[in-house]
Image (cartoon, rainbow, N blue to C red):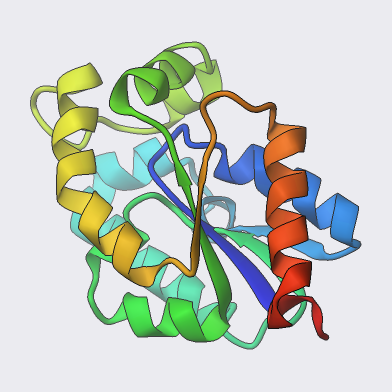
Length: 177
């Protein structure tokens, strides 16, 4: 069974996911990286050249491409749940964990990570903290509806977050391969 990480940009999906994969001796799949590699260009360039619609199409194709993955840790892009057709597919992929943090924390993390800050486009005209607050308000009900489990990533290190997710996963039927 796969372990699927969802949450807003900056919530720790890629960092925690790679730690989890190593701890659990599983393959790590970062869907944004899959999209970028398949396109042969960074996500920001995809948005610039094809718009959000083009990126979301590529994201859906990448998601369909990993649907037969087994025993992987998968970090999904923050907006992959926007497409209602993706939600049941994501739940069928494995156990879904929502990584949570308040907007101000996410904005701080994004500002302090040059790869995220420069590699991802603004999704609204406002950008910055205003964008994060607005998109979180829009997306949180969907994250909540899809997730089997939620973890607050504010006051713990990525290693501690990964350990808590692994313990939860192994305690349930998710640990059975």
